[in-house]
Amino acid sequence: MSRAYNIAVLKGDGIGPEVIDSTIKVFEALLESTDLKINFKFGEAGFYCIEKYGTNLPEETISLLKQTDACLKGPMTTPQTAGAPISAAVQIRKMFDLYANVRPCRSYPNVEALKPNIDLIVVRENTEGMYSGIEYELSPGVGVALRIITREASLKVAEHAYKLASKRKKHLTYVHKGNILRLTAKIFIDAVKSLAPKYPEVKVDETHIDAMTMHLIKKPESYDVIVTTNLFGDVISDEAAQVTGSLGLAAGANIGKNYGMFEPVHGSAPKYTGQNIVNPTATILAGAMMLNYLGEKKTASKIEKAVIQVLKEGKAKTRDLGGAASTSEMSEEVAAKVRTF
Image 1 (cartoon, rainbow, N blue to C red):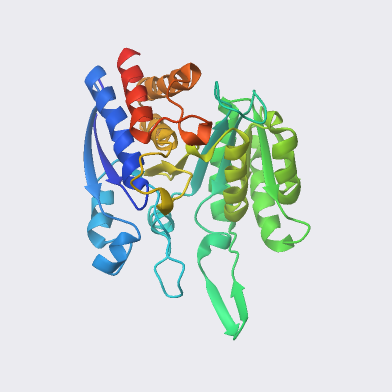
Image 2 (image 1 turned 135 degrees about the horizontal axis):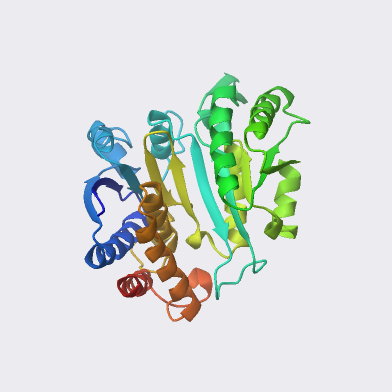
């Protein structure tokens, strides 16, 4: 018997409400066809909250998150003006120490990918690096941003990556720029290498970030688990998602010791707001990742199988996949398949 879970839901900005509503529709089908019990608790967060609350992450939402088992988060627009609040996602990651950003990328049936047999995971350190948000203007026209790398954070994300690799193809690649960023890269590299004796079954290799961007195009099928620092992980996970077909299929997890936040990799795409044309699959798959995190592997598998079957049949392909299906049509197809598995 599955236990009941309290799940925070933050719809976000732009296309966020559409892809979240589509995912909830799939979960409703799941709840109808299994003994899974979920209480969805909706909160407010995102760019639209700034005018209303003076912040993109209101205190009420923070309190809500602390009362839940996990969070399903829609994409949010990050303000770019000086003095504006930092990304709501970054705030949540730091608040709950969600140190591992996990982004699976794989080839799907009937989806045009660079190679037909890609199956890799990018594990990105999630709380520091170039996304620490610490910047200074030393003088007019001269700015400095701090890249903060600590052994503690590097060990945590490396441990997560090793554990994933040990359960998959037993291959870990760590990515850095040690020839230029010598001090900070060495802290990260030493942390990764220090854990290798603990996982003797995992083959470990390394590459520089610039070479990695090339290798992901030339030979993406040769990778299993890739671990790297915050900025580099952000770049190569988006690249890997496009190599496998579309950002519309790319889900992400933010995982810490005691909490997890799950979201699509893509942004809020405000120009498509309310048009019912975007691909909800990334958010639906993020929901499946959330179920896996909660230990509900069988129910997560139902969603994953439903998505694969819908893509295989090809009747409901959204525009990013070369079709004409709407957001709602895609989610309805997945929900219908969930009921049959």
